[in-house]
Length: 163
Image (cartoon, rainbow, N blue to C red):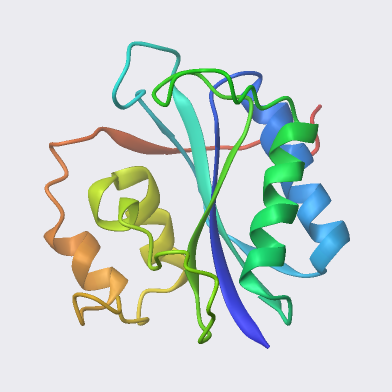
């Protein structure tokens, strides 16, 4: 089994879309480990705040197959691929890490891990002792060194039931 780490984010009907994404992933893959849900300001454009979390999954699936599945899930949840890169999203699911030698030509670990607080903090929460392949430092150490004044981020009480 391979450990897959995903970042899940939304700023359009965010609570409902995140619940749907996580529930769909649970149905598809079984047990997930989920970080806290964090709220942050939009990065790269003016817009509504985003909700983000990181989940880890154990899987035997190939990386290319996973990427295709996740794109279909984003589309099912209303992702508009005609929008500019920095814009509001019903759903954004990014593969962060995948602990396997895979020839899919997907660059991992994803660069956003060390660039964005909304990725690094929840990843450090779930996988604090895992090493970042390129930097040779754990995610906990990378989060500790991160300039937290660069992006505001705060945990929220997330309603997983939708009541």
